[in-house]
Amino acid sequence: MGHAERAHALLSASSAHRWLYCTPSAKLEEQFPDTTSEAAKEGTLAHELAEMKVRNYFYTTDFGKRKLTAGINKLKKEELWQDEMVGYTDEYLDYIKSVALAMKIEPYVAIEKRVDFSAYVPEGFGTADCVLIGGKVLHVIDFKYGKSPDGRVKAEGNPQLALYALGAYETYKVLYPIEEIKMSIVQPRLPDGISEWGCPLSELLAWGKYVQERAELATKGEGDFSPGPKTCKYCRARGRCRARAEENVRLAFSPDKGKLPPLITNEQMGQYLTRGADVAKWLSDLQDCALAECLAGKEVPGWKAVEGRGSRVWTDMDEAFSKLKENGISETVLWERKPLTLAQIEKVVGKKDFETFVGDKVEKAPGKPALVKESDKRPAITNTISAKDAFKEDTV
Ligand code: SF4
Image 1 (cartoon, rainbow, N blue to C red):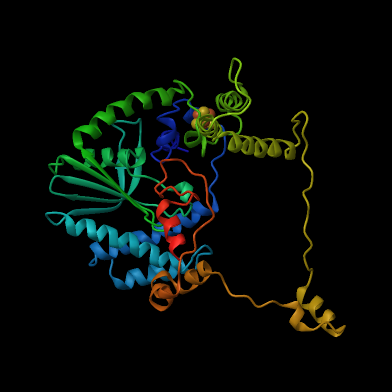
Image 2: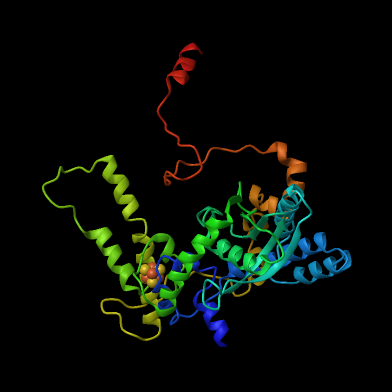
């Protein structure tokens, strides 16, 4: 690995939400392997498709229909390909088109643009999905393929996008009179998956100064550890980090002082839930880490690895079924015919066709009540009956 690559790996834009707040994390993470999940590989595939569509729309002469079709056919051969990617990437393209059309003048468009933000972060660079510059506005758009509501990414104050914006600004400042920054995240697999934010250039540059200071500390592995659910979530040191361990032990086990009533109040309940948000996750990371150590033949006092409960599988299902039938077992009891779930059918048919053909046959059943943070977008519910509803019942 070359020096530049090492620097990029050390302080990447995608991990900026971590090293900006927990500056020693970058150096600490270096000793743990970087693994790519299946979901990340799926995201890469969707990104490739998205890029081709945007390229085809804005640069039709260089990347026409034939190239697009050939590219898509190639992607379709990939193991992780899913037809639903077509609809989701259309949503991303539609969003970019709407941004471009809303600009006062025809924008300059850069796709999968390598941006250099080394003026702020030593040897820092990354790849922005889409950069549009129209008049005084620089707009950075990022495509995210995650589908977990927990993984919803907000554009507001997003350090990854802000670093891309800084890099894009440095590249284009001599060519365009940029004064305003806009950032958008398009996460089409989530309902309401578009997040937008903007600020004047001066605000971005002031943040750039803060980044310079933090990056200097991070490069040296200095500064204070800052454990927290968001910061530690994907940190490669999360299972072994002492600062995180100590913080979670403190949060979980340090009792409140003095003589207190035997029951906790609702206020304290809320406080404990907030304080303990990372405790369960930390214990599970710790278990993963200890299991890996035991499997590697190392000792973790008090613990060992054992074989989990296995499940039985046919060595040859066709042959087993034939034998069952020969012995008088009816085929009808061996198979069950059941419909795919609504979500599975939508995946097979595609979002648009699903909506056209059977959209009016779908209604949303209320979900099971769930406890979420106050900042969640959904309105709060209760099961107490309002005076209006009670009156309605009386008059029936
Ligand atoms: S686990 Fe958390 S506290 Fe520890 S280095 Fe990583 S981000 Fe920092």
